Length: 81
Length: 275
Image 1: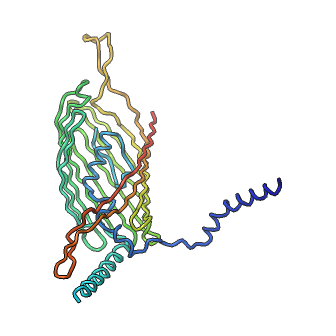
Image 2: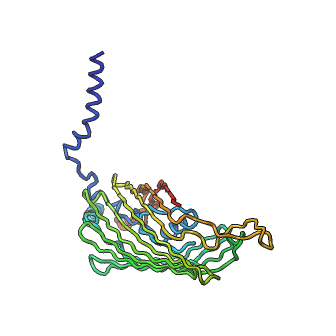
């Protein structure tokens, strides 16, 4: 009984201290090297690929559906009553 | 011999491309110069809205770029308000935005002002955003604030004049996960204060004192509204194949058959109102 409790405690203790062990190693490095990012730098992968079309869609969502915010662009007051 | 020469040239161009790409992703860059013209058109809910939009963005020097956007909504409406009590109308809204970006190492500062005008609504706002790349340029943290002030009037009523103020706080994190995948999380809190009603919207009720037996009254809305929105998006780069054509021993790339960005996101909006 005591042995099984001890085994369980060890397991939970290991799970509890694992994040601290990983953090203490401090070996985390950028894993995608600069020369591997050619696909990500293509215009098609730009978050704001079509800025005015994106702004228009955000405007439609705001005015028609009341869905606003977290669009990734700066918004302000718009006269849409 | 020709094949070897083609390989050497291919390796050379590959090396140059890698150098260019590596140099371009090693640091934060200003938004690209561009000139966009768009004409939009929307029909729905008894409304027809269309108009042009123009965006011009230009680098002034290596650290500063400026942008200008002109946007027009030409509205012709017979919406639910018209069916209830209002009259059909036509109006035009025009919006102008001016923005500046300043680049300093891995940090991009953005400042913008905008104003929107229509015959019964004027809105002015400014925004300030800071974007910083770190962790080997794999991570980008963005923080921003917008503040807007609206002046609401009512056609046919010269006395009516109300104010509404808005303030937005936003924070975002973009993370490159693999060489073909990046994710983006944005959270934004928006606070509106003031007259948040539609001045033309009213309800009809039975009124024994009126000769017609009914009267109209304006709806009563809360003066404060706070909403929080979150959006999680990801982009996956996906390329199917390239089209090649052999020309005198060289391979000429005709084009990419399918250069696709697969993107989807989940957005959740939380909204609270206080009366």
